Image (cartoon, rainbow, N blue to C red; front, side):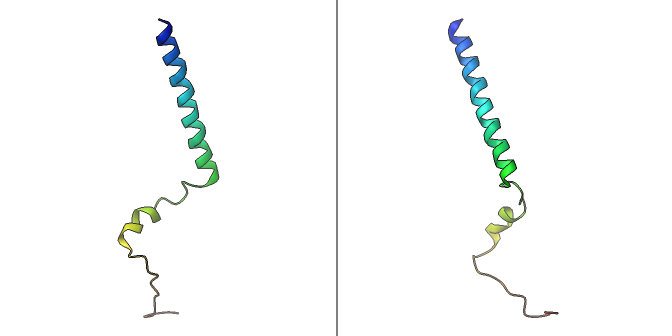
Amino acid sequence: MLIIMLLVCASVVLALCFLFAFLWCVRSGQLDDMHTPAMRIFSDGTIEKNTKNSP
């Protein structure tokens, strides 16, 4: 019974650590841009300039 209580306490502490890390990432702005990482795989790394119809 003692080992079950130890494992439950350890899992709660680990879950709180993950929650703290997630909230820290959200507040620091690391999850703001959800579109660019998904589209980055389609680019070859060069910067494309629009020279056709520039206003």
